[in-house]
Length: 129
Image (tube, rainbow, N blue to C red; front, side):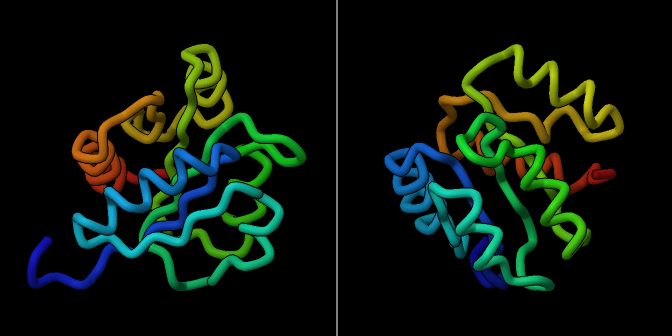
């Protein structure tokens, strides 16, 4: 991504260690990352017309990734949305809820930063969320 504008990403996962690790790795790859472990705080601090991609954990306390998706999409539907899950069953559930979304937009944890970037790029190419 050298020479290009920074890819702006909102990352929300209730595992703060994961948020920190992914944020650090993505920033080394020229991403600009706003990371949150609380979905309600992420929603409050959301910047409309700012992010290129939004990456949400599916299973979080107080607000699921699906609920946060609908709230954020109601504010700004331009970013590419993708979902993280440690559980294969949640990825299946996500595909049932959002059947028109590119399957690369459902990302199973754990994932290496390089593979995550490839999945996000593929998701953005075929974005129909």
